[in-house]
Length: 459
Ligand code: SF4
Image (cartoon, rainbow, N blue to C red; front, top):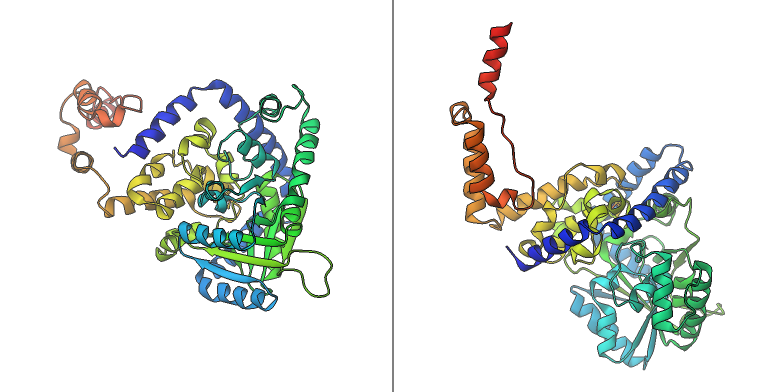
C-alpha cells in the first residue's frame, strides 16, 4: 500500500472515532442543512437552474481554449497582464518575480483554494514576504498553522470556544471573547495590513470570457480590499473557472450562494475587468492574472472525467458525504477534500498515489444528488477506479482475488460448493485485505439453490 493511502487510513480511523470532532461537524453541517432549503426557494425550478448551469459549463469546457483566449484579449486591452502557468512551480516563479519587482514585503490574500493548491504562502515565506490571510476562517487557520478544512468554510471544525482560545494564545486577546468580539479583534489587526501591503492576491470564482473579467464572491469584503488597496493585484485562477458570458452570472451567483451557504446571494459579488483606468479614482495600478493548468488538462483529456471541471466549488458535496462527515477534511491530506477532491486529486497529482481516494466512498450517490451543477460524482469515482486498474495501479493479489470472485459468482456449481461456515472462513480469513477495515462477510448457511428447492417443496 502506498504511504499516502496508509496515512489516509490511519488519519481517518482516528477521526472517525473522535466524537467531539463529529459533534462540531454535525453542528455546523446541521446549520447549513437548515438554510439551504430557504435559499432554494428563490428558484422557480431549481432542477432547471442546475441543468442550465451544467449546460453553460459544458459549453465553456468544450471550448476552453477559445474562451480563455477571448478573456485574455479583452482583459489585456484594459491593461491587465495574463500569464499562463502550466505547473504550480511556474505559477510560484511568476508570482515571486512580480513580488520582487514590486519590492513586496507584505502581501494580503483573500481566500483562494488554488493558492492553497500551489502552496503560495510557504513559497512567500521562503522569500521573506509576510503573507496575511484576510478571510476570517483562513486567518484562523493560518494562526493555527493548519490548511483549510473545507473548501467554503475553512475553520468548520472549530467551535467558537476553540477560536477564542486560539486568539488568546496567539494574539494575546482577552480569553473567552464572543464571536462578534473575535471578528472585531481580527478586523482591527487586518485593516493595518491592507494599508501596508504592496501586493494583493485573490482567486476568482469565475473567469468571464465575453467581457474579459474575473468574478469574486465573498461575504466579508476582504477580497475587495485585497484587490483594491495594494498597488498590485495578482489573480491566481484555475483555467476551468471560465464561463462564456457575463450574463451567465445571473445563474451562477445564486447557485453558488445557495449551495455554498444557503444564502440567496452572497454579500459581495465583484467583477474586476483590469487595473485602475485613467478616469477611475481607485484600484490597483497593475493587475496580473495567472491562468493555472496544474493537471487540469489531464481531466480535460478524458471525455468522461472532463465533467469534473464544471465544479464551482460550492462545497455541497462535502456537506452531503457520509465519509467526509465522519473523517473530516484533514484526513484526506489533499487541498480538495470530499467527493470532488477524491475525483480530481488523482488527475491533478498522481493516479497511483491518490487512487485510494476513489474508494473513500459508499457510492451512495448523495454527492451527485446535491451537486449545484449536477456532476455525476459517484460515477466519476468509479471511472477513477477503472482508470487506475487500466493503468496497472492494482496489486497481483487484488487481480487474482477479483478473478476468483468473478469466476465463482458466474458459476452456479462453484457458488453451491462448501458450507456457509467454510465460505466465511475463506473470505474473512484468507482474503484478509477485504476485512481489515470492514466487518466480516457473513454467508448464509444454505445456498440459494437449497433455499429455492425447500421453497418449491413447501409449495
Ligand atoms: S462537485 Fe458540485 S457539489 Fe461539489 S463542490 Fe463542485 S459544484 Fe459543489
